[in-house]
Length: 112
Length: 113
Image (cartoon, rainbow over all chains, first blue to last red; front, side):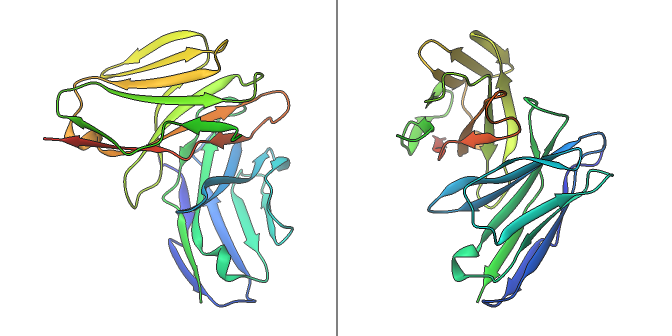
């Protein structure tokens, strides 16, 4: 069974631009969560989608948004990029609420 | 107070010893608990999950949960150098935060040959 696939793996952007990250969950998994990981803040929850509905959102500004499609694939968008948005963005999928999550390899975003 | 706290590292143990990693959480309604291992430069991988009080064993790993004390731990027996990594504790609350996992900051373990 294929794991969680995130694209792209690496991305370099400049301040003010926007970016879209993609996540394909494990087949059969309907829940997709997004996290931001930085050395100073650890793993921070961004949002979670289940059957195309956002069920929960972390404490991030509105510049961070996401969506989930009917095939469970998910995208995350960050607009008006800031230097502080440089981080590893991780996507994780699970079969549902309370189930273990499986992480993708992440997208490393660098803002110049 | 952080929602999920892990014992500050780094933790260093000799090869073959037992490594003990601890995690406390503040939300009494938490219902599921997970341990992930993250090697440097890699993404987290699931090691164990536990839902009920008591012990759960899987090979060299044992997860222990005490909901009354709001405490979950991970024991690694016969530690190997390949166990050297950062271990993350994660907690879910079905009721108020369905779909949200809260992670601790992690404990870095070094197993010395």
